[in-house]
Amino acid sequence: MANLNVQPKKKSQFWLWVMIIFVLGLLLFFFLNKDNTETSDKIENDSLYTQPN
Image 1: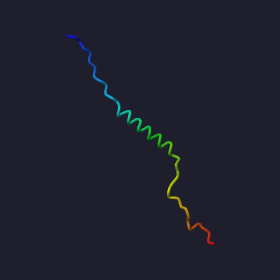
Image 2: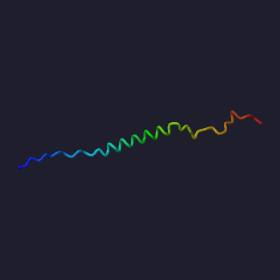
Image 3: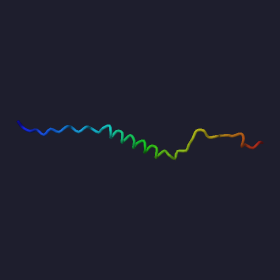
Image 4: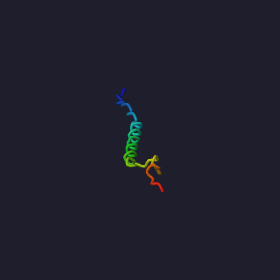
C-alpha cells in the first residue's frame, strides 16, 4: 500500500471578508458624514423675535 499524505481542505473565509468590508464601509460612511449638521427642525419665522410694525 502507498502512504498518501491527505490534508483537509482549508475552510473559506468568505463571510469574514464580507463582514470586514461591511464594517469598513460603515466606518467610512460615518466619518465622511459626521460634519453634516443640517437639520429639518429649524425655526423659519419666530413671532417672539419679530418687531411690530
